[in-house]
Image 1 (cartoon, rainbow, N blue to C red):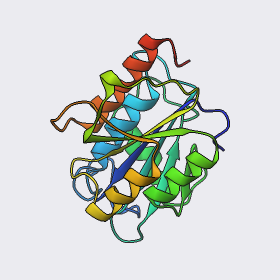
Image 2: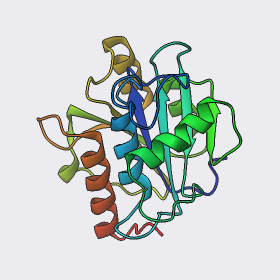
Image 3: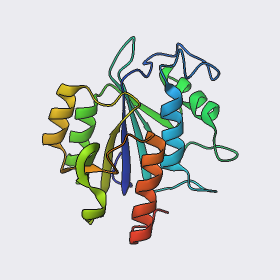
Image 4: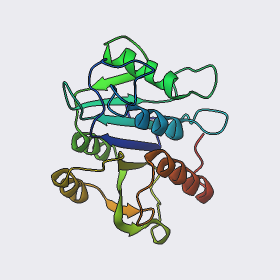
Length: 198
């Protein structure tokens, strides 16, 4: 499942609904801030005009009623144009209903997702405000994964475990930034360094 990817972004969602209890119009409310997930997915998988074929986005949902649940989403999701939040919500809803589609739904928590990536040879980096400054760190592996929190962040006990499980803890700055912006910035850094996504 992970063999064809060079970049992976794992988003820990504290409130994302784990059942199809929302609509495309209510993803920010009944979806448990599923809009945060949708924007992060768009930043991870879509460049300005086309999808990034070597990138995987994983949203680990910890909201009611059946947490945790991990959504594995890649560029195989077909959209007529660059997707918007509602387009992504529709794809996620199909997965939560158990329908066939481009999203794999797995009963898996954030820590388990990290361990699965490491077992497949990914170098996994945790993005947190108090980590090592990214500007002073060389991202040199051919297969990189980044784990970041939603607008709430990580529960304290999970954060402790992630810091020991991940290869490093990196910081984009001492302020909190939107998950979608963090993902776009990481892509820009890697693209500029020559690890161009295609």
